[in-house]
Image 1 (cartoon, chains in turn red, orange):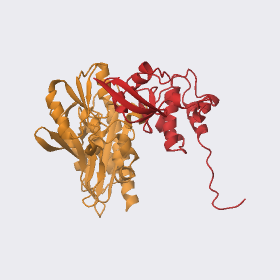
Image 2 (tube, one colour):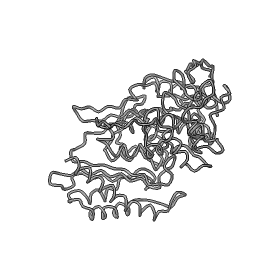
Image 3 (cartoon, chains in turn cyan, green):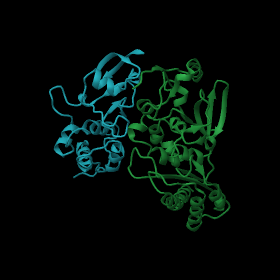
Image 4 (cartoon, chains in turn orange, red):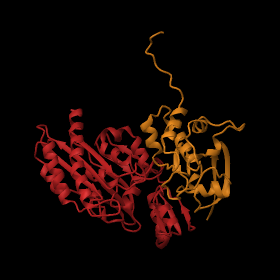
Length: 164
Length: 292
């Protein structure tokens, strides 16, 4: 019941002997010591364990580690630069009060990253739709939505050929 | 979580053979968003999980332009359906339903086939497929058989599938012109919520604007997804307007078998059927008008 899997984790090639019944969350936290990803409900209700697998946000508590074989995985640990400067989304959550206790934050940020990577101009409704699976019990969501909006790349307006 | 061995066959036949070898203790797994919860909670204790993820044909979403038939592999994820422009434009009732199943994290992994097989009374994924006269293709040790999606369910959490059978795909027959369809999941939280009631309506109009076909499908209105046949029959042959739809809503509410539950009261569910059959019906009419 041990299987060897290989995957790309935050840009690093990883090869690991895993048990078939391990979740990806178990592998990350309990085996590899990457405790940035949180376990909340353990049943896919709260989104605290959200990581990105092949560009899609998934609940790592319901995702089997064995299925990570050959995949590209991103976790919260991969966001800040090696020199320690924060990713624009992380900085935006800090600047806009999107964090309070911080437990939901890694999941919120990974869901937001998956969204903005796919749809850099996401509007408020699209942000709400993408974050509906992430529960926060402190800030009350408004600051979180504002944090995501503030982290969007500034949109260059098309002036329709009119010169100023 | 209980230890199990994970098997990943690449063909349906291989999956069925695996199941035959370990029949008592093997379970099929699709996206896993339901199965893993069940294993974690101890409601399911498999020694073997047979994954259907590597069976490529089961993940295909394809519309045959020559015949107009839509084929949805059972392993197609909700997110794939939600993001498909073809689904959004031509089968809006499917888009309405799948875009509100679970959460984005669940839709990215969870599959339409898994949603059907799970057979919860709310079955968001089933309602549109029933309204579209979908047919499920089942594959078992003795070969294939077809079952209409509306006949797939026999009780809560129970389908007609035999233990080793696999739901391979769902086919949707070609849609007639002048058809509109819409679904609403009525509940409280936007995500990870089972609906208080689910209402799907599909209308096809003749050239003279009379109703040629009507489907009114309800989730959580009975132990299994149901069609409101009385309301459908009432609509067929009539010129549809708001008053007719109000009447159809009343009939559908009356023939529903709603009951009180932790999520809501029977009277509330009846009211919501009444209101939303009218609203979804009007949505269908607007769609048909816009596409003329």
